[in-house]
Image 1: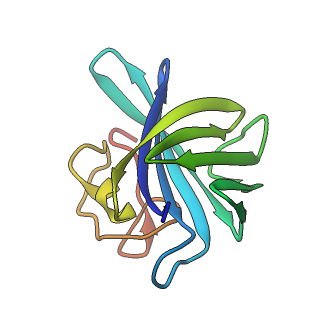
Image 2: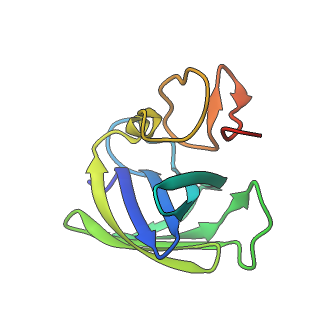
Length: 136
């Protein structure tokens, strides 16, 4: 099973990747949140979701719907043995398995304000409304 939460960073960009393509009652989606990192400051950059991606032998591919402008909407994830790589918004991230449930991204590590309910995939939402990054 490859579904779960994966995390990775490429320079000043951090990725929280939610994979829900196998296991009991999968949604058949891949989604994630991107953050910019400047020293100790982490800022929310945007979210994406891939509805009905092509999944074959640990390789996941599809076109993402992004909450911000991107140079490339193709999302490609390759996972094996709890690690792999993800190409999102034209940028490559090495990723490692962080949690068996993708809802773990609602922890206090994210820079969103307000209470957050557990969620499986899709853009960051709380009580049905999109979450706003802190300070906006």
